[in-house]
Image: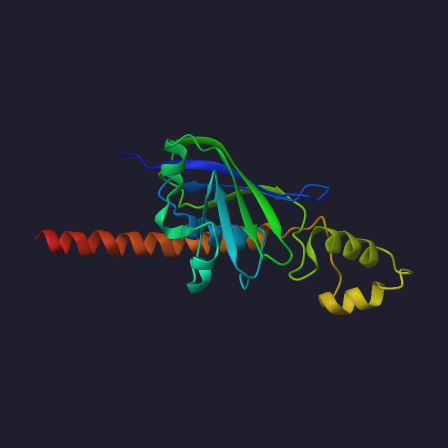
Length: 204
């Protein structure tokens, strides 16, 4: 049976000009794995909490304090992308860092048969560099861009020092993103092969 893939676009909300990435992933990808892919392609550094909001359900990493909230958080690894698509879901929300509140609109653009010569996930294209971690959300990022772009801005030197060097908003690092996804695809390939061999051994 041929593997199926989805082409999805990840777009950061409340930011202009648009910051977005397009990738292709297997329909067997669960939401925890999709979180890791989003972290790799934006990229983010992964040290804040995250959550997917799909209809009236939230998916993430449930913690011991979840019982005090009225809304339950389900395990991200329990839901696969293909299941969502089968249920008619074509768009949902991914939030990273509840302080800065980075909201990403995830849209399923198409579903098709995988190319047997490609190891998935794979990066297609995108535009503009993602904000630095802990910059202060969309409004803080816009202030950061203004300060770092103008040498005579009173906060220019402080922002360059805080970031650790110049920030190039149009250079989103396509080569680095491609390399990250290739590494993830290789790990997935090795894992699937190990699973296949283990199953064959059990069936003997």
